[in-house]
Image (cartoon, rainbow, N blue to C red; front, top):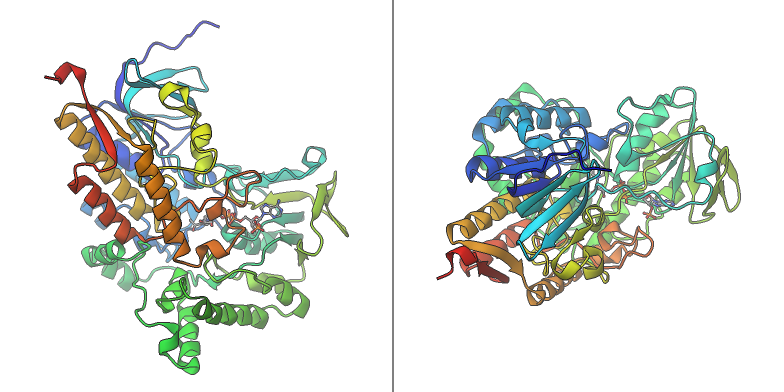
Length: 545
Ligand code: N01
């Protein structure tokens, strides 16, 4: 077929993905550095995660006043969130507002899925192809594809034969799903499943929740924000952001300095009660050593398991829900709105897949080792091929035709989660090896975008044509990432997606950097201060003396 697309002029920079990361990167490269920049987005609108994840109950677990950009004082002051935890539609409205306010749409090609990105050393350019047959070339390629954007649909036999409807939470239909009068099966009890179940249960005739691994959850205590709180936020942005910048996970609260052993058992219980009453991810901040000391962690785990048993009336159901096999917060800790109460409803049942695993999906439902469950609708809340999955979908090839999949066959190797050896002039926003998913995302994104922007600015000011990290730097950083994870209890959850364990065949490597955002920021700044340590910068031959 002849190519009907006119050739695109060469771009200084091309960005993939119009979520939080891509939009800010566009502002920085196009408006601050003045580069010719285009952003390609597979969806029909901006939003990234918040464009796709429209499942019932979808809401952010970061508090709204911290889940937003901080780069623009005006934007911070003019936007007002309505609830403690923003719901998906409100976050999407916010991101659309940003797109309009900064006139981003004219530089974004929507409905444009990238199918391949190949670096060509002969012209030192990236060559990008799209599903629609367009091609682009650029000098700088920046991926802003998110960490949790590649849906993990488990290969359960029989799905093709299922006569009902089925949906993955990460690819939810825009028109919504009507559960009224339906019998629903939900597979998965991670953060997403825990958000979705209470909302589905309230509408459906019956909901069966299939649990493979029991999970902790702390109440979110979501509520509309008061006028006083909104005014306090409006007048205290610098202070709030200073806290977010200084804490390991970029949230607007500090982790307590006390350790579990510093207080009596009675005091400890009272502190946990107080944290439970406050709700949210802040529960983790009750003691400094919860994520590093097994005995300390066990006290929180015990408290939370007792809470489950206190809420759930059926003792057998309570036992299955509280039979949790990993330390608290070793997997991403969910927060919820009436999740455990949902099991007290007459129309909700729990299936323990540890006792009887799913064998297959039938025409009319789900068959486990001992029972067949009927379902009109199956909801897969089964998570994502995290961190590497979204990058692999781009079919990136670096020097000498090296595929990223091959370069990372034993697990991702990056320098700081930002750059990959053999892939010159490529930057991966919140890539594997960066704090990303262990932190409040907008904080990590802004730090990465600012760093990348400064790096490209430096290259242009110094007539540098290629920036490329070295295998040695990447190997050393993998060791650092590994050591940072093993200094915590995070690797103790052997089935966690942080380790790639949720996707069959995926190499097991702890992917995010667990040393904390504040420390990571210092490392990145030091790399710059040392003249971009870990990178090789080659001059533009046109300017070589
Ligand atoms: O995915 P998950 P998620 N048979 O991988 C189960 C972020 N997030 O979408 O634990 C049966 O955590 C699986 O079981 P197991 C947040 O970072 C953010 O819930 O592997 N079950 C698990 O129960 C979060 O961590 C917000 O044994 C199967 C579930 O499916 C990340 O997204 C809100 C199965 C998957 O849990 C991912 O959360 C929501 C199978 N074959 C999510 N395969 C915000 O606040 C999988 N499971 C922004």
